[in-house]
Length: 88
Image 1 (cartoon, rainbow, N blue to C red):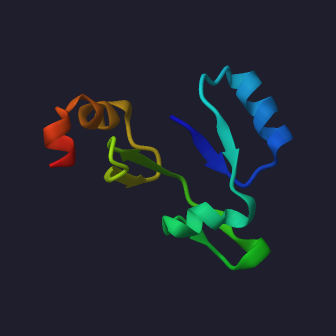
Image 2 (image 1 turned 90 degrees about the vertical axis):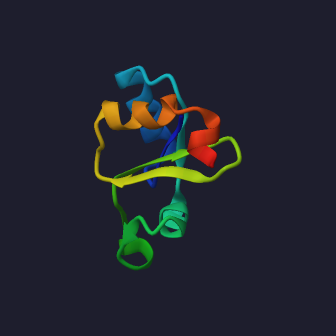
């Protein structure tokens, strides 16, 4: 599990400490990663990331891609599938 957005590293540290996040937050400078996942709108410095959740299998294939904030049940359903069902 990781979080990624274009905020600064110091902002990430503060946010992670305040919310006691047990996973890393990565800086996506200029929304470069968000663009790769078609999860950004705007151009250049005016780009804004769109909230989304992606779950990948062990081979790096996306097995869940949802815009917005999917509920825990939806995410857990995908995570609890046997590996053959997820990646097959």
